Length: 103
Image 1 (cartoon, one colour):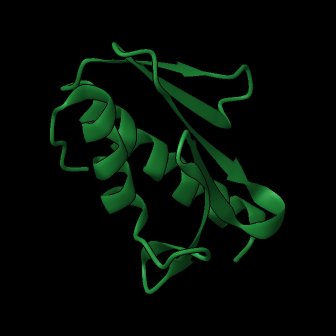
Image 2 (spheres, helix red, strand yellow; image 1 turned 90 degrees about the vertical axis):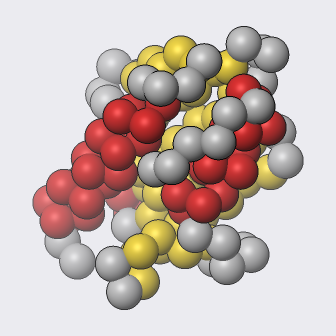
């Protein structure tokens, strides 16, 4: 996959996250380049999602650890534990907000 193709896919991931988070008790901030998305919840916990262009991965950082997601069969899977990106986000958002979100 080219860098351009990866960035288009990563943009779609960020948009999907932002749309879902709009329904939760969370704040979203982006870095100045739009490559890092930070979610902060009312309890003070944070999730950070960023694109890692050299490896063509989406990285997720949480209090419970870091996860690297690579695209496989049109879905993002963790190289660490096999989890799917949006399922893991749903799990982590529920910990921070008490709300279940579908991404």
